[in-house]
Image (cartoon, rainbow, N blue to C red):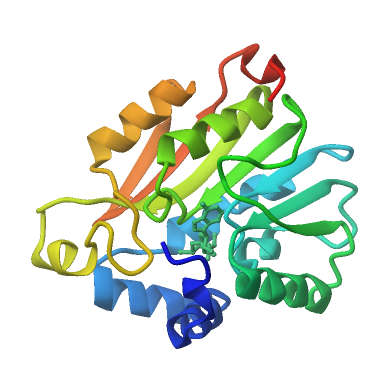
Length: 221
Ligand SMILES: C[S@@+](CC[C@H](N)C(=O)[O-])C[C@H]1O[C@@H](n2cnc3c(N)ncnc32)[C@H](O)[C@@H]1O
């Protein structure tokens, strides 16, 4: 992906509609045949992190997941992305929502400057289909999570199930990386240390919810 693909008009439009769940639902149904409701619902995991806990959100984009964070929550929330324009939007979004605990940083998904075994929850929304090294990004999530910590995320899948999927999801074009099939994404997760994720499919969209292996995040980066 070009380093700041999201500085484009597409990035502005994407950031705008992702902040509006009803509009995002309409757009993703019309363009991908996918329902984004499970994605917004899954953000409930954020409120389940106890006080003193740590949440890492990568890629955070313009911060649509911030809606799951209560301003008074006593947690650390690290939001990381590679795109300077998305980082600017995420900072604005955090301040608009009065979220003083959110730290927005520029980082590659494969090298996030966080301690091994430090996070309770790792959010990976709509990143795996963009990353050039999705296994590296999942391994980084596994490194950062506490033993048994939770990974929640979504991604688009490559496949031939529908014409829309073939036309809209084209690996190595626009912001897409290699893009996995469902089987490949599950293999990547297993390789990175996430066994038996629970998954939910809607068209070419996959929602995943998994736990890191015990002892996984104990090694130094
Ligand atoms: C489709 S957007 C999803 C953003 C956000 N999670 C959401 O739900 O709207 C993909 C994001 O991945 C970021 N990205 C792409 N490659 C990255 C990488 N290697 N490391 C970190 N972020 C990356 C892009 O800058 C963009 O913000």
